[in-house]
Image (cartoon, rainbow, N blue to C red; front, side):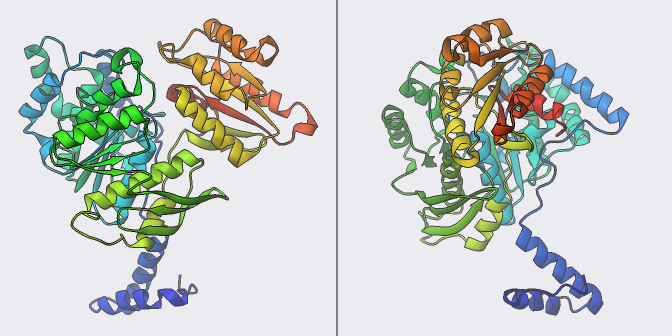
Length: 502
């Protein structure tokens, strides 16, 4: 460290920190100052974003017991649309969700990536954050994060055991037991209050009005793009889906509205008027000014509520992530009162540092080279179209082999149709979930879309990955070939483990 000199433009900050350390050994003060300025350049610590199983056998055993206990409850796709049970749980826990302000995120696609960007920005401005997102890629502990990193397995277990007696009390008093998602939501809100956090960043599980997360009063409501998904529960048009999702808009809140279908936007604007909320619309009050592909991501100029932010490096791929970044930036500006009480921008260097630190596992994530293997959790047609456009823009593969394992309750044909123009061949498979579509049924749909000669069937995911990699490698002229694994968050998570990333 003693041989490392600060850059000229760092001297002022470096000297100031050294001067402030008047009561310490001078050499230690210099070392600490150098460390702190380097941390400033690198952005806030991000931690391990996709934790593996606990190394301690006893901790791993205890976590498995919690997971098994949670698995006895209704899964995330079985719902009784009501917030009565979660409200009752919050009441007996002492309303932990009231202990901190919240930013509430709904929409169809981009929620998790946007939540991660908001979390990074808030953390860069020295706020302690709690983030609740779903589903997880590999570990259930990913869903609850503190200070930008998933909570430890030990803390997850402790939080579950702390609220378990209250959960059982509510189970006995309600017509239905609390669901898997409701219990996890209660755990997140309790963990955030216990930390304590300065702000919670909360992604809905499904919809909005009756989603278990909707017992918070989000001062900022974020609506990412709405498209067709969960149509059996939310409605068959963007407008019908928007009615449910508008439930996160609370009295007097600020609404950050991403680009929407016209009918969905009308629903959101009507709800905002009803509750006297302030609306900021992408393409009007904020947006993406420019973007260009860069090594490892993209370089952006964003217009926020307070002005423009230039030279923002985002280490994520695709136009959709640039739009997510604009939404996230405006949400944080709104949280700090910019655009309402204050007419200014956030510190641009802090914003740059925050965005440069963002990771979003399973979202066009490169996990292998030679051939390149990319993972993307697209599971509906809109997400698939965004992924197809991004992978074409960024990678320029001469040949792209798809590996698709989808859930049976999704618009699988729509997903395959979105990828058909970019996949040379597709390997259809399944993941370990009970929701996973039967591989023969998936193959029949794939043949309808791609034709028989472009479809390979491998019932096991490990065999599917091997088959796809072999296809990508088989001819020397296709040295630029790649593999895209997609169709489900579960498929992507399991592929990540098989490819040595977990």
